[in-house]
Length: 121
Image (cartoon, rainbow, N blue to C red; front, side):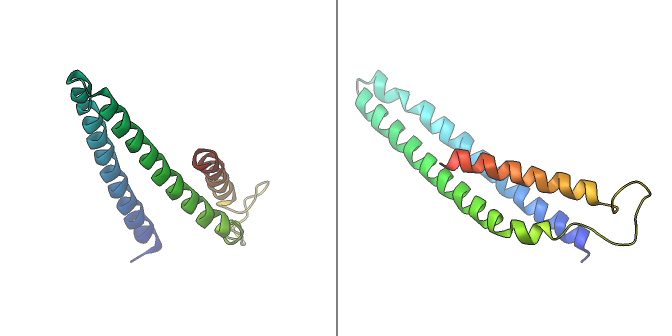
């Protein structure tokens, strides 16, 4: 299996998991809409309590996941930074081939980590 195939396979696995997560979000949204029956039956406090529990638990789980992923990738930034492509394939007037795309991707990860930090906190 080539490195490109391995990266493609990993990207596809993550895409499948994100699709599963999206389906769970849709199910949670449907369940939350169904809660209104409690209020129409005169039990608004039950709807309020369940809605609060759902949101609190979801935010705690999401925050914990984001904090875990942020910590994991922030700890790897030094190693990732050393992956900058270097070598004899220099283009006159430019850095090594792949240098620009590498640093663009690295910067994108850093931005995502800052966003994760804000949302997890």
